[in-house]
Image (cartoon, rainbow, N blue to C red; front, top):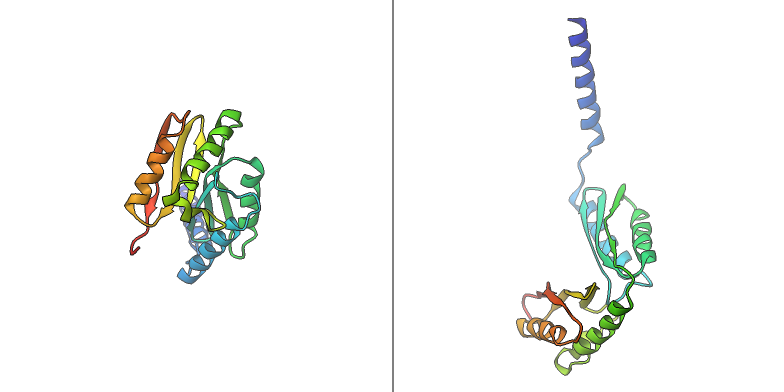
Length: 178
């Protein structure tokens, strides 16, 4: 009987301590963290058109996802995010794409095919390119945003026309209202 009471007391105390450590997160704190994470990621010096870093914010915890061509970029992304005020934990799930001269050549040909095409040249203007070209073992994924369905389809057609591409997954999102 004494053991049961002791166990119940320990379980009760543990649940009280857990409830106290899970403090509510104000929505404006999450909103601020989201903005700062985005800002810090796009300001990374080696973040380029062939990298795609995504993130999610759950309270004071940030999860990083996506693919990068440079292992340093994975580490740098985690480092800048964990120094944001309020961030308590960073789960870095960013995949470093394998080194491949074949994929490197493919990236350059894809860049020219997409950003060099007159109807898609407008996307080459911003510093942070809205169409991200991810290449892994000859398989291409297009990420990012475009103005309309025609541009989305055109980017996919241009990528499919590049010699050496095994497959193209088009995850481009059409921005509403344009």
